[in-house]
Length: 243
Image (cartoon, rainbow, N blue to C red; front, side):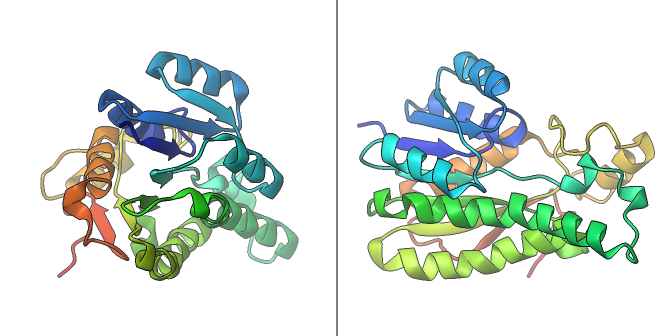
């Protein structure tokens, strides 16, 4: 029987690739997003269901949990991104406290709170054998201002999620992505020199692809990963190494 897979921020980039991978495996996939037109187009192209939902708005999440069905077997918390790219970050001076506070809150809300609230909203729908997968970032290891701090907080929160869900047979892990091409993460601000440097930092000398993250998510939701929980899985070609 097909599982229900919920992918937040599934209209493009990594989320879209994850949705496509699970759909190709015959799963029932539901993607969410805030832009109705983009969501509708992506859902139609992928052959999945699309639900307009802002993961930072509790009332919208309550509606999603009520309507999605009796079970959510796999939750992928993909919604997020560096909200600093949506404003003129060069003018975000540290002595402008109101602007600084607004910028930090935006990144925390987009990258941490969406995952926390979405997971809580559907937690009771996740059966034994289910998986919660959150998309982190190498930025958590590199500083990266409020964005990196939010992704680091996501990894810390995942420990709590795993401890709470684990006794029910549900795993919770973070996929920490390195530089991934084919997304709109940088909002057209990535210079060729910066791109070259990001690729040069890897061991395999290539950019990441959305499909790299999708395949890792597929594994974490598979029977072979049932004893893997509370982990951060780094997918970055060796740009950040652990031991």
